[in-house]
Every structure is written in C-alpha cells, then in structure tokens.
Image (cartoon, rainbow, N blue to C red):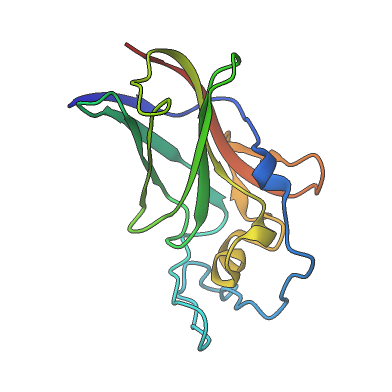
Length: 178
C-alpha cells in the first residue's frame, strides 16, 4: 500500500450537493454558551452531545491518499470541525470520470472511498475536493457550533456559497496518481 501525504491549503471547489437543502430548518438547535463557546452542548432526546471547538473555528482540513493493491484510492481526512459534521468528497477528471462519497467526522477523522473507475485502477491527474456543505444540511448540534449560516467558520478554506450566501469550508487540489 502506498501513501501520498498532502496538507490542504488550496482553493475552493463547491459541490453541487452543497447547495441542496431541506425546505425547513429547525430553529431549536442548542446554542453554545457565549461565555464558554467551547462548552459541550446538551443533547435533546434525538441529538448527540457535541463538543464545540473554540469559536470562531479557523477551519483546517488535511488529507492523505492511500492507494490499495488494486489501485483503488482512499482519502483519509482530518479536520478541527466538530465531530458529527457531515462532509462530502469528490474525485474527478475533466474528461468524464466522477466519483463522490460522503462521511461523518468522528474523533476528527473521516474516510472517503475507495474510488476506482469501474474496478480499474486510477492513473493520472485528478481534481479532488473535500467539502463541509452549507450549515442547513448539517445536524442541529453541528449547526449550533458552526452557526445557522456557517457564521462561526473562518480561515482560508472558508468561502461564501453563491446561491445561499452561507459560509462553507472546502479544500480543492489536483493530485497525481501514478
């Protein structure tokens, strides 16, 4: 197995999924204490307890590509976003190959893939992105940490989503698989 470590500092690529939303957004999400923004949020019967990082969150996303013996590519990512955040990843070329996956951050980590082209190993240059979609698509306890429109997100990986005006976090890079 080969590992290709890379630290993300790149440009933004928004997935079409990041602009999808449900018609209604619950307003009863727990809110972190203003005096202690890194406090643990109390869970309602249907939500989990989430420890919010100190606010604002200067978002980091790092990743490592792992290529298995059959040429499948797995993305192991890490982030300082709150556990339970739902992330998307895509792996594609301009000539037509497109694969995507989604995952939930657990203990600061998430895995996407493995990606292959109909069981054929991947070779060449690919565009890869890892995205935290708009807040309204996140569970209530994550919205309570990042803000209803992502207003608690900061840093070079954060941008404004064109359709909703919400903040999203994304890393987008070109990788070479040889």
